[in-house]
Length: 122
Image 1: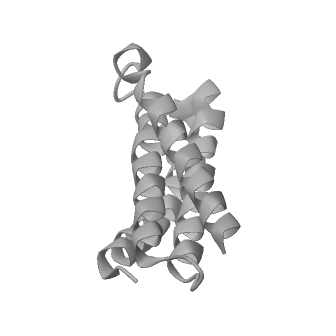
Image 2: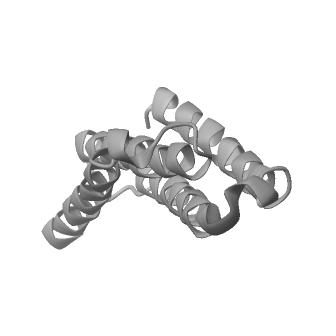
């Protein structure tokens, strides 16, 4: 089990809770119609934090595959959720980073496919 992956996953879990609360309370008026995007970013982040914890603790998966799957999920969180946070909070305009969100989604999908293939092998 990779100590660094678990460390970053735990930090992202705590950050997900903080960002969820921040969006629901402090940014509620600022977000307006972007509230749904913010909530989607938080949900995907937290789902994949939990997925990483499960993957890292599944004995049927090789360490190499665990780390690759977890890395794909971490990149997905950074690109998908991160870009939605930036766009929703209006820190950056969507036109400048629109292409990053689907790259994060593709990273999530790749991680899930790799996980499925690992389960199929066992």
